[in-house]
Image 1 (cartoon, rainbow, N blue to C red):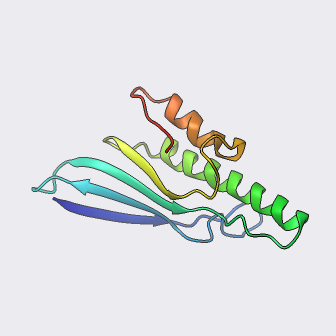
Image 2 (tube, one colour):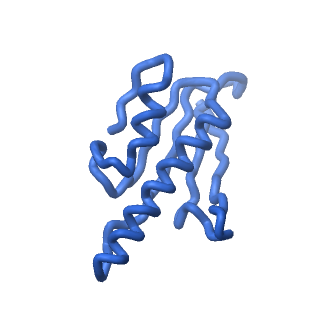
Image 3 (cartoon, rainbow, N blue to C red):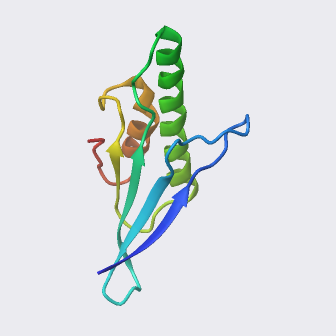
Length: 115
């Protein structure tokens, strides 16, 4: 087994990075490096730490944008094999801010669970 790695840290409309830590894409390859067995999207979304209500609100918005961007990256570049989105999402899986990731899982041909 071998791996292939790429990272994403794309800018938003205001020229600022969407991710405070790059989104890591890892393809797990077969022994001959010919076929992707599994793709991992490893991330760490914006922390929930905040000093006041405005920072909390801004953090919630940023996590929503980050989740939307992860979903867009996967939709724009569909992996050739099953995939897993993992890492520290800093929200429960039922949070509305993670809706784009749930929608991505629900819209796929194979059942997937946002864990």
